[in-house]
Length: 64
Image (tube, rainbow, N blue to C red; front, side):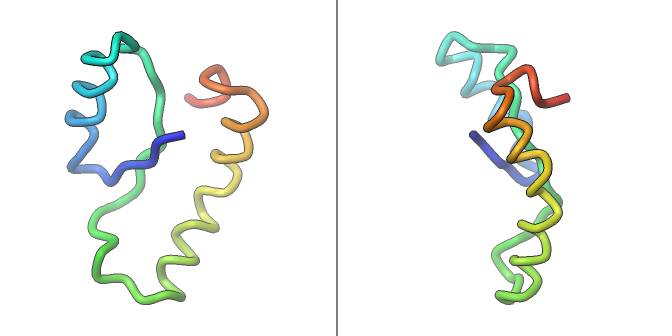
């Protein structure tokens, strides 16, 4: 499971293609995250929970 911030979407796509899986799906969250406090980072992670669970249950087919 890969989670990237928005500015790194193209890099993630390029990496997936270089590994032979150009259709690999990943989650995207807003940028930046490095300056977030613990509570803000926890809230951001909580917002991704449903998508992470879907991926774990369904694999690549579970992501949009």
